[in-house]
Each structure stands twice: as C-alpha cells, then as structure tokens.
Image 1 (cartoon, rainbow, N blue to C red):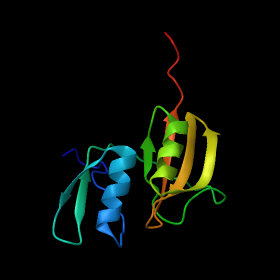
Image 2: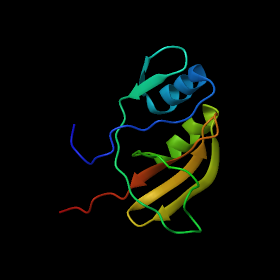
Image 3: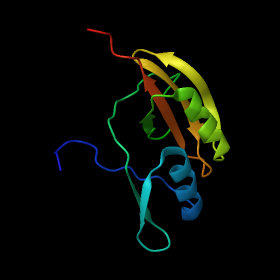
Image 4: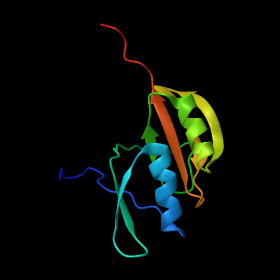
Length: 118
C-alpha cells in the first residue's frame, strides 16, 4: 500500500443487504461479507480533495465517483432508490451531481472534461 493515500472509505448503514443491492446495481461494485453487520466493497477507485467553500461543502465526507456518462448515472441512481440532492452542475474540470443513497449518505458522481486533443 502506498503511504499517505486514502485507501478505504467506510459508510454508515442500517441495512447491509440494501447497501449491497444499491451499490452493486448502480456502480457494479463487488462485496465481501464479514459477519452480519459489515461488508467490504471493492472494484472502485479513490482520489480526494478539500472543500472549504461554506456555500458548497458537505457536513460529512463526500465520496466522489467518476463516470464517463453522467446523465445515465443520474438515471441509474434514481432507479436504484437514490435521491438526487444537487442536480448536475459544472465545476472547473468537469460536471457532477450529488445524491443520497437509501441510507441517507451523501455522495457525488463526476464526469471529467474530455482531455484536449494533442
């Protein structure tokens, strides 16, 4: 493991089965159960940043998941039982939206701008 890189993200849950159903159907993640009250997820990626903008920052950590088809991901989130909390908006480097999963955790999905042609 590389030092000083975020390597794990843990989200609170009340219903492990529902969490696995939601994240499996939306993002295709894989799961490994560690007893009835804990499941690890894999097949995801991770980078991070700090947001100090008082009008935009979230109250808790905000996982941001990358996609190449942001509109399709909005549909998948809603179809799986998520709620869009911030509609798609542009930011320097791409577009993103925020959503709440069925447990109430807030996450975001971003689509980076296409790299300029060389």
